[in-house]
Each structure stands twice: as C-alpha cells, then as structure tokens.
Figure 1: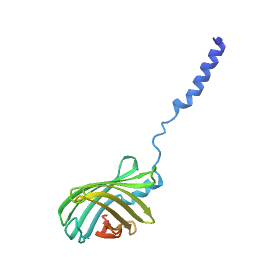
Figure 2: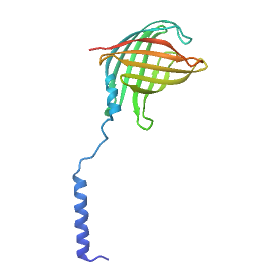
Figure 3: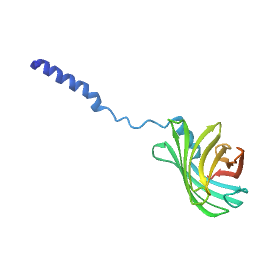
Figure 4: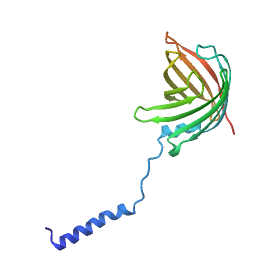
Amino acid sequence: MPSPAARRALAVLSVALALPALGAEPKGPPPPSPEQKRMGWLVGKWKGTGAVKENPFMPTGTLQTSDDCAWFEGKYAVVCRGSGKGPVGPMKSIGIMGWNAEEKTYVWYGLDSTPSASTVVARGTLEGSTWTFVDEQRMEGKLVRSRYVMAEKGKDAYDFRWEVQGADGTWATVMEGTSRRVR
C-alpha cells in the first residue's frame, strides 16, 4: 500500500492530468472533405428543359424540370427535390449525392415517380467539370446499364444526358437537355 505522501502525490497528478480534458471543448465532427465541398456547385434552384429520344422505356417528347438542391446537415451530402413534366406526365423526385471515401466515388441515390427508372443507386466520378454516374438496374425484365452525365457550363448552368448501353457496348442517348440556376 502506498504511503500517505505517495497517495497525495498520485491524487495531485491525477487531477493535474484531468484538468486539461475537463476544460477542453468537444471536438465535434471533422469538416467536409474537398470532394464533399465540391458537391456544393449543385446547391440552389434549377430549371431544366430537355428532350426524350426514341427508346424502349418511355415515349419521346419534351421534358421540363425544377429542382431545389440544399446541403444536408453537416454539409456532407446534397439533397435535391424535383418536379417536372415529361412524355409520361408529371413526376416528382428526390436525389441524394454523397461521397464514399472508402470507394473514392460519388454516390447518387434517387427515387422518382416514373415507371421507367423509379429507383437508382449510381456510382459517379468527376473529371474536370463533368460528373458521370453509372448504374445497373432491371427495366422491363432486362438488366440495363445506364449513365447520367452532367457537364457544368460555368456556375449557373449544366448540360445533362441519360444514356443506355446496348448489347454491343455502345451508348445511346435516351434524354438530353440543359438546366439553369434560378436566381
């Protein structure tokens, strides 16, 4: 058993070591990574117009979209709520863009009210100012590989296109258009 003097010394040492921790502010979460910050270009309100081309999944025609994108809590992800009208009628959508640091890829989770592509989990890359998301899903009983490309045109516009890969490996454009930031 330590002597009374040794016990006092241990007690004083314990308190001295604990004092910095008691007065320290909690650290909190880390700041968003550069990849997460880069998603911020999408934050804002957008209006889009486009065309649906001949394809086996939906009729051809024009497309009008409105999207409102905002940071999710912590600024680690962007959430977009959309509405629009296209060849199959009115639609609503929600999308979430995030960064998966383990896979070093962007991820897009999307749901919409159309019968052709109502749920999507796509993996994406950013090269320069072009975002490319690739997805595989069953459509009308067939496994379909598609990609969605957004090419930034400055900070207030982007061109978009949705492409489907054929059995021969070539990509066919199903939809394309432009979206502009609403000020």
